[in-house]
Image 1 (cartoon, rainbow, N blue to C red):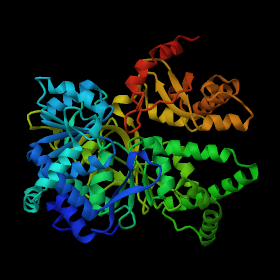
Image 2: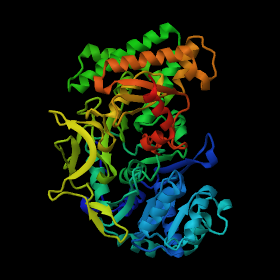
Image 3: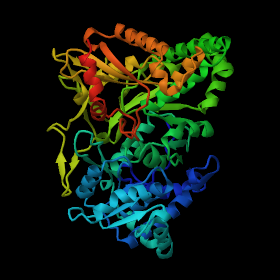
Image 4: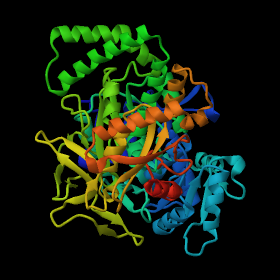
Length: 608
């Protein structure tokens, strides 16, 4: 259990501004926020908790001068930059409601959120974002009145963040700042988070101060972390995970946030910072595993054998813990020896040698990836939750975990499954309903307070939840059989050459798949076999294609007949958020991929 710091009020009455004042008073000299200016490779700029509160107060005065009022939503499209983090807190202190919009949102999604929120102000990052928002200023159906642009050189006719900060510094009055935040109540909205909107308009989920604090307290009862732990913040703030991990939990715990604006640079940030905690969505853990595997493949055989032996010892040690057993003394000694002499030097190269808490959420984690990291003594504590549950609802912990599961409910939360396997949840951190454009809430709970999550899963005899898939993504074949695409895809991805996979078969008599070569492992695999080929052409190399065929055959051998992939197409170009195939949290956008590769998929069904 993490040490709970002084709570300045009863938990049910706490607000985020009260916690920030506590941090400035009790931990004012500790680092709160760090970032690298202008993408520099070294040299972090850091604000202490005292400095953060002062900056927040100045910005609050600036936004007051702009015209921001209590209770209104203010939209933001800014990356993981200090301007976003500080603005978020400043608006919260005014009693306004900061709302982050995904930087990858389509124009129609931006317009929908602007109309639905009735926001008069939007703070955007630079020219790219400004050009996407400017047309809304002239749209009579959108209440938007003003833009604030973070990058001063790109502000054009709009107000710059710098000038707003200067205004705040001139007009700041301590008494007005303190009075404003003290008017906030625990049941006031802290933010509104929009669902991804991949199957229609995004839905608005209102989240209160109380639900965030209750969730933070429940997490601290199961999460073992050092005091004032550092966090690498790289997921979008529009996602509930990073809102909790990158803003709200750091304020609650008085911890230290390192901003990483480019998700592709998260591995480099870990190598530089050697964090004690690290959160990665499944795709991030997959990419990190692929990178380590590629590096191991280049080592001499004798060294690889020593690493394999150490990994075996580590997995055996983890297996004892998973069963709730104390490892025997000789096993403990062997593990400590393996970790000290073999594993820690390797982990140090990845920045994970000080890691005490590794976590994941967002989608089913491939079991082979979990087992791979267990071979280094790293147990990924998989968790599960939704925007509608303020993030984490179930969680594994050091005192009880099952590899492959997403753990058990946090204290005070209830979980059950419907007859069709849909997961139902109930508890204090579950929202009551979606926010309508008129400010009312459309109730989403049944008469008994249960929320149907749309996820399919099962609960084992020990209370652990095992995810199957999203209900709406389940494949129903032409013979009426239900298939979880995530199960099949994760089985295919157990081969290190297959980095990404999408399975298709809805309304068809058999499954087909699009497979993407792993961008790091494929060149390493080829080099180890003396194959000299352009990485872009590896998908067409006979040796690669033969190995992929064996990989699919091996996966099919572990799947039932309905789940087996009959035909597939191998691709070389990775899917990503910037090209549209992945969400900002790195989950598959199935509809986009289906549409983009419709011809290839149809051709697979046409092959004889």
